[in-house]
Length: 359
Image 1 (cartoon, rainbow, N blue to C red):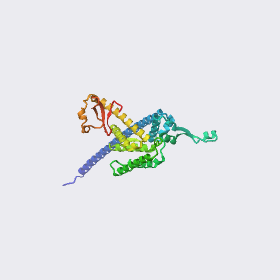
Image 2: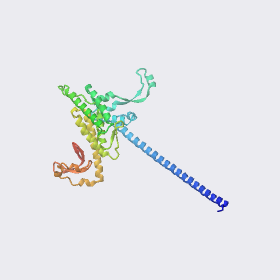
Image 3: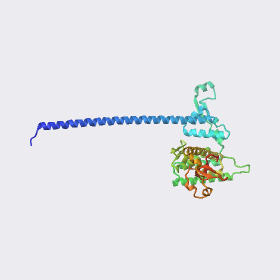
Image 4: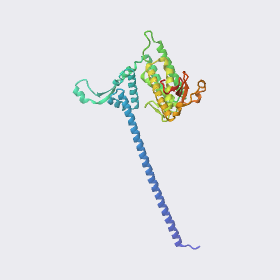
């Protein structure tokens, strides 16, 4: 077979042309891909920027609302903003102090004041020149006295209870270590009750507090966290917020009510006023939220108002509640022969919440 140089060169030229076209096409595709990627990155960047801006706006609104709550409870605006600079936990504690003071006739706002730092007791003109910008001053002693003094005999037990509770925060209720720590905590409650029982009550009873403010907060938060964990949520002790709350507000408030039941059971014998008030406040707030939830449910399903009530016979059957779900609105019989709309909670001691009543 003869070899044709012209044919070879022609074929080579054709192959070179096709190769050049393919390279051009590849470069074009790469350019388009790069441009598309840049567009995607820019789009995602703008979306992230909008999300961050929206979050900052939401955080700012939330912060302003909390500052507004503190000022409404008597704190000066400057002091409220100074508290807010210390974070969500500080805000939560301050609001708790202000609410407790208002409920008990104490001006707790007076414990949070603004004053010049660096003021001297000598020459006033020198002191003013040397003074730093106004800073927040917190009267911790005044706050402790507002809640009531705790007898020294109880303090070591308080420290142990707080230490145990902090360890439990890092565990789940099913963890054997959690169970062991809970046994130790209950033993400390028993000891505290024994100490209180041994005191001389001939002069009208033991009026001293058994729990410190810190122990009350930690104990309540610890039990709330335990109940939330059983519902796939948790309580952030540092930020004092519920983690995983989205879409589970009903479950969270029912978990709070279960926590109040257990807290009362474990601390009842000690009858500490601050512990009792804190548990009561948690119960009242949770029930208020559940009534609001019931209102939302009724708006979506108004026919629930006219549903047939369960018969008294069926209501008395042990397995009746097995067919209900927490948060369900049902009509149950009343003692007078009528019926009322309630929300089923399934919480020991408070199985039903009267949607329109006061219990």
